[in-house]
Structures are given as C-alpha cells and as structure tokens.
Image (cartoon, rainbow, N blue to C red; front, side):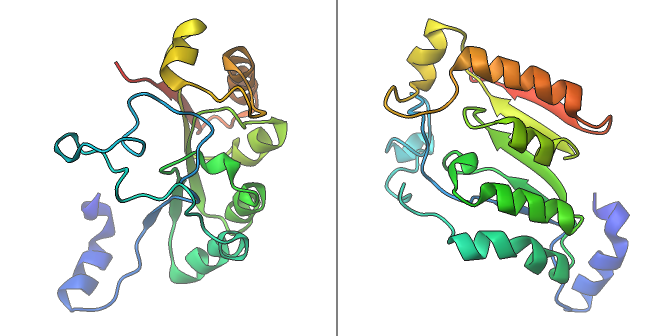
Length: 183
C-alpha cells in the first residue's frame, strides 16, 4: 500500500512525524465467550498465548472511547478497525464510538463474535469497509467451542445468524461481510 502513500514515505525520509492512516483499536479485553482456542485466555508462550500479559478488566474509559474518533480525525487517520482482546461490542459506549466514527468520516471495520450485534449496531456499521464475525461451529459445537456464558444476556447462534442476514440486507454495496472460524 505504500505505493499509494508516497507522500507519507517522503515525509518519513525527511524524519517528519507522519500520522498513521489506519488504527487498530481494542476498546476492551472482557469477553462474553470463553473460546477454547483464545490466545487471551490461556498461558503458553510457545504458542503465543497472552493471558499473562492481558487483564480482562482493561478497557478504554467511556470518555476516551467516545472522543477518539474526533482525535483520530484531527490526526489525519483515515480508517479504524475495532477489534480486541475481548468483545468490543460489550463496551458500554461502543455505539457512541461507532456513531462518531461515521460522523467524522473515518472508514470503519469491525471484528465481533456477533453476540451483541443488535439492529442499532447494524445501522451504525452498515457502511463500514468490512465486518467479520468469528463464528466457530453450529449448534452444540458452537457452544462447545465458543463456550458462551449461560449467565449473560446475548444472542445465541441462531440469533447471530439472523442478525448476519439483516446486516447483509442493510449493508452498502462496498461493505464486505465475512465469517471466520478456527479450523
């Protein structure tokens, strides 16, 4: 991609400060799933697991998350992927953040397990560059692999598929919607 950003390359050669074009944002580390393969839930440094380095309690403050799109815009950032060491849609101010990404014209992308993707979220992400749902299994295998907490209120797999269908109807022609799974 640097070919399309030669002006930025030239600025770097002159030792000038250059704002990033793209930011990957982790709003929080908490998750409502306990996926049996998750690098953020286990410790095994040889396999790249990160549990020793990640606190599930870590999250951006409400004020910072809501204001970040303005700050990113002022810094010249063009795109932001919202993902995480957890489920970013659990953050209490995520809808305000997504709304502000749109307001400031920052191209959005989202990685989610889909368990919190309600109709309002769909409306906020329908013009994103891409949306990827991490769905591993179907029916009982989904419950076994992703281990959604039975004590939390969120969508089960059938509801997630329904929301995915709604997103595919509402999305703009430029939005790429995909599903990823661990094999």
